[in-house]
Structure formats: C-alpha cells, structure tokens
Image (cartoon, rainbow, N blue to C red; front, side):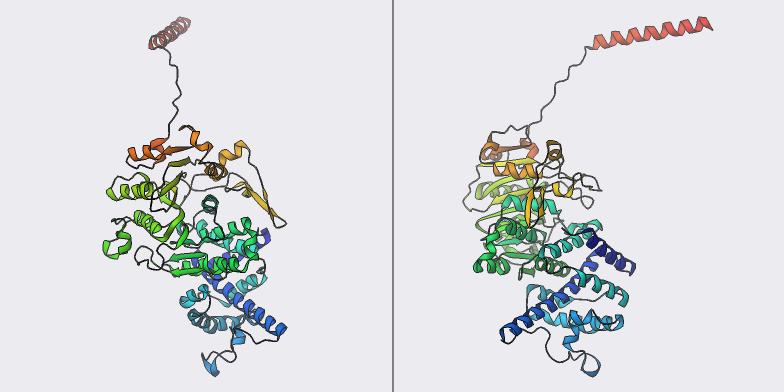
Length: 524
C-alpha cells in the first residue's frame, strides 16, 4: 500500500502537468513512464557495475557506452551524462536540453535491442513543456522507493487509476476488483501461459502475476519456474503504442522482467504462432461495432463468419487457447442471447464443442460513467470434444461500489474485492464480511460459490442468487445463456380487499363529508 504522503506527491506532479498544459492523462503517464525507464536503465547499469567490481569480471552488457552520442555540436553529449544519477543533479536548463535533445533519441535507438519494454520506445516523444516541470517530476521520481516491488507497483497502479477518473479514456481500464475476481476464479498456476489479446495497461496480466506471488511463493525458489514467470508466462497484444509502453512498464514495475507485450491487431492479423498456444486467456476486449470481411483475419472467419467484434473476439479466444486451456472474459449481454445465426453458433460451439463452465451477470453500472452497457463474465474451457454438463450462473447485484456515475466505495478498501483483507508484515490477513457487507459486495460470495459449483451449488433453487442449469435445458432453449431465461422470480401474493367493501367505505366517507358540510352551513 502507498502512503498518503506519496499519493499527495503524485497528485502534486499530476497537477503540475495540468498547469503546464498537458491535460491528457495518458500523455502524463507516458511521460512519467519514460522517466521511470531512464531511472531503471541507470539502476541496471549500477547493478552490473557492482557485479563486475565484486567478481573482477568484465561487464556483460553496457547500456551507457563510452564516448559521446554524436548529436549536435562538439560530438554531442557523453553517454555517461545521460545517466539518471548525473541528470538529477544538473541545473534545470542543462537537464531539459540533455533529456529532450539526447536522452530521447538514445531511448529510441534502444528499440532494436533489449527487453520488450525497450522495443516500444521507438515512438518515444518528449512533451514536458518546461525545465521547471521536468525538474519537479525528476525530483519526485528520484524519491520513489523503487527497490520495493510492491510499492512501485502500487504507485503505478495509482497513476493508472487516474486514467479512469479522467473520464473519456476510462475504457482502457477494467475495474481492478473485477479483474481480481476473474483471476481468483481461474486460479493461475506456475505452469500456465497467460494471454490477454487486448491488454491495454496489462491489468489482467499484472493481477495474475500478483496472484501467483501470493498463492505460490515457492515458484521463485526454482530457477526453471522463475525463468518461466519472467520470460514465457505473460503475453499481451494491443495496437496502441501508448498502451504498449504503459502496459510493459506496468509489468516491469510489478517484477516481471521480460513479458511478451507486442503490437498486434488481434482481429485483423493472422494468428500463426499463437494458435493453440495459451493455457489461460483473461480479457475485456473493446466491443465496438463491426469490421469489414476484408479487414478481418481469415482464420477467425473460418471459425465464425460475422462482422461483429464481440463474436470475433470469442472466436479469437478459442483460436488462442490450447486444448484444456481455460478462459474468463467479459462480454456484452447481447452475446448471451443475440438471435442472429452467428450469435447462436458461437454459443452452440461453447456448449457442444467445448465446456461452458459459468456465467456471472455483472451489474449494469460496473463500467460507469464510461458505459452503461450490461455485461457478463463468461468462463469456459477449450476441449474440442464437448464436456458441458451443468452451467453455473450467478446474478451479481453489488460489487462494493455505488452503481451510479460517481461509483463511490460502499465499504473500506480492504473489504472490497473477491478476497477481503490487507497486508501486514509481508503476510496477507483475511477479513470476513458481515451479511450486511456481503450484500454490498457480492464478489467474495461469487468466488466461494464458484468453488462449489460441482457440489452444493447443483441443489440451489432457481430463485437463489446462484444456481446450475443442466446442458439439456440450455440446448432446449436454443443455447440462450441469459441468466433471466432460467432464473425464477418469486411473486409475493398480495391480499386485496373486495371491491364492494372498498366502495361501501368510500360511500360512508362521502356521507360524513356531506353531513359535515351541512352542519357548517347551518352554523354560518
């Protein structure tokens, strides 16, 4: 958890950007990301220098080479003067000149080598408008406790939350507690290969990594498992270079050394090399409108011929998963009951060709104020041989926040999400919720009941908040997957008085009124 003091420092820098004319929150985070990357490069160089000094062996990789960069007068600026440890102590004018004229070309040149994050630096642009603002931001970043993975990860998450609070860009960020629920329900393992084909800021991948750290701590004591975690486990695609830069930095700051975060238009490009590759897909892709057949990947059209992006993404998830792979994805409600041939076919495939495990209907206000569309989480396993027996449904009515445009928290932060609790001395302390609190936050109940879907949940009544529906009934309903199709509503019987009795009472009242008026008239 970050302290109030650190929050206020970040808020101060944020306000300084706004005052300096940078009002787009994505641009603010992008500029801070570049500076964090600069500091990270110097930290990595210092570690390698210390190793070389300690062992007496030459440096294995030198980031800041000897000599100058060759840009401008007198052969340019020495690479050593571009290091964070030098820059932070220089005067405002020198710092601004070196960063804008030399450091950013240097970052762009790094795109050809190094980590996944370095490859996204080829489009790096320096837009901080003044030396004074640059000094202020550098001073803040230099004081951040970057040695503590939890703190620097939380710091970046706090900055990313400002994308959502800023309004028009909120579609880039799925609420963190909804992500946590989906990760909790799919329970990533140390052997998983995880993909988000519309990764944005990499929220799902970060949450999966944090889940593994909390639930499989021995993962990092084994070299092979540790290498798998850092190099092979996490894969994210996006076609927005800004998102790629922010997302890869988010992964780096959360302790994943070299994730596969790359440029890819998931619906337009073929998927050779990614087909049948991943054991877990977590995603909330942008469902907006339709594509032309000419611009849609042919291998997706071979699965389902449609122009609807929401259906194409469902086909994509099936394409990416290996047999036995599982998925938790957010879809608009229309996918669950749409009547077109393509809608029915994708649902038939989930039920008949694979194993449809569960549907969680989300409250319509979850994505407010950016979108009021009704959505659901679909959980399934790719089998290529069927396997659907019963489908588990849950009607989520409260997620811990108000469902209006303000989305105010209804509970303290440690009681929100699928696993209420807080960290203390490096350990997670679980908290139990009262019945009143569980009514405001259904997520812990969802996680618990999901775990019992093969047992006690089978006997739950259709009037309950969660229940199971046998496959045969779903087939008989034309593969309709909307919860309301199967949920039973209890109608309370209301006893009404007989009309003659009500009329007689009205006549008696009318008679009293007339008598009262007559009496008043005689008095006057």
